[in-house]
Length: 332
Image 1 (cartoon, rainbow, N blue to C red):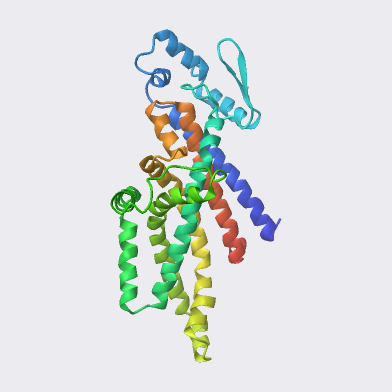
Image 2 (cartoon, rainbow, N blue to C red; image 1 turned 90 degrees about the vertical axis):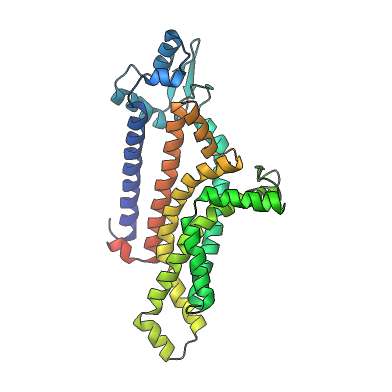
């Protein structure tokens, strides 16, 4: 296949291979660590019999390759777990079973996923609006005091960690000014207005950091486009500066913004771990922190794989959108 269809096929195959490679790396890192995995998972107060039960339940007596093969089978066809008195089937895609609660890892993730998706998607909309808007404004006001002010603000935003911004917003907005209540997650289906109102500060915490990067990228891409020969030709024919910036310079920034947005979705998912813990949001990030604290390896592995899946998927979608915006990518 050639052309755009061939590009899509190659990108799909590369995405599947990447996901398989990630699953191997994650599984080996967590289950081939030095020390007794069963003892670590069960806890220091467990008896030898309890440690042996954990080893049987996690199949730790099998070779690592065999365990990974069973894990891979669970993803595609499901697998069975012994509960001591009966056998419980875990339907595909099966990510395992939490040793601490006995609940299937996929059910735990699906229960927390709406919170994390609400946080990341809302923050993404904000950082695109704020970042691209700031970049366009700095180009429009280039050479003036307002441009230098915006540049200083974006540099400060890039240098400030997300948890610092979150703490400052929470202390000032919720504590001193009392403009917003302390965030408490509300389901979108229950009350859309309260859902957005309670997520506003977490959205801003993530968006302000990422928006600074988008502002810098948009500004540099637009300035590069404005320096090209065809733009000078437009000016010579009397085309207004506003039309040049809006129709030509901004269009030239679309492709790099699309590519950066995919990478930032991955970093935002990582930043969501800190943001959820800071604001007490019951999402994947907070659950992952809890699973690490209690050493619930199946939950940790499952959540890391799901986060990796979204990161790889976001980059694959970005490649497709990049190719749509610039067909030269298809021929590369």
